[in-house]
Image 1 (cartoon, helix red, strand yellow):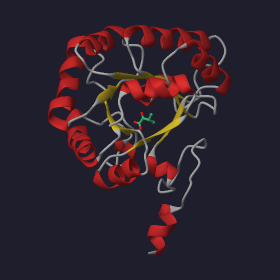
Image 2 (image 1 turned 180 degrees about the vertical axis):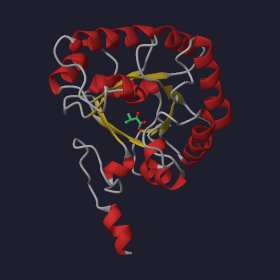
Image 3 (image 1 turned 90 degrees about the horizontal axis):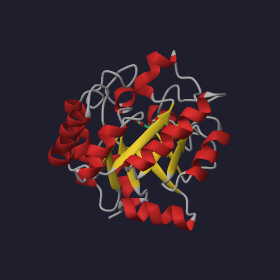
Image 4 (image 1 turned 120 degrees about the horizontal axis):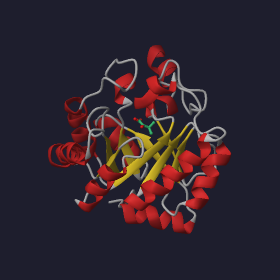
Length: 239
Ligand code: KIV
C-alpha cells in the first residue's frame, strides 16, 4: 500500500512518479495493477463522467460512490478524494465533516482541496487526514479567473510561491500545480520539500497528474498540454 511517507521518500531519492484520475472500478484496477502509486477521484468527474460542463456542480454525494468504487478496487494505490466546490471553503469544521464522510463512507486515504485554506488544512492534518493542496489554475475558481487561463505570470508568481510555502507549513503532503509557467513550477519544486505534482506546469515537477480520459484519447477536446498516449475514442467507435 502506497503511503504519504513513500511519496516523501520518492522525492528524497529524486524518483519521479505519476498520478491519474479514476472514477470507477475498471480504470482503478488497471492503473493500480500498472503500478500508478496515487489515484485521484477528481471532481473532474463532473466533465468526464457526470456530463457536466465543468467541476463546479459536482457534489459530495456524487463523489462518494465513485471514491468508494476506486478505493475498493485498488491493492497498492493511495486513493485521494477531491473535495468538491462548496464542501470546505466556509471553514475548517465543514472541511473536516466533509473529509470524514470521504474516509468513513468511501474509504479514501487522503483528500485534496483547492487554494490556500490554511486553517482547514491544519484542522484536517491535526485530525489524522492527509491533505494534498492544489494551486495555480484551480478549476473550481474558473469563473473568477475568467476562463481556463495560465496563472502565476508576472507578479502573481510570488503569491503562488507564498501559498505553496503556506500549504507546506500547514501540513500538506503534496501540492498539485495546474497550468502555471514551467519556470515557476520548477522554482516552487526547489523551494518546498514536499512533492509537487504538475499538470500543464512543465516537466520539472516531482510527479505528473493527468485526467485519465485525456491520457487515453477518450476526451473529445482535451487541454493542449495533455498528451494522448492512445486513441480510445477512435478504438471504441471502430469497435
Ligand atoms: O479533478 C481533477 O482531476 C484534478 C486534477 C486535474 C489535478 O483536480
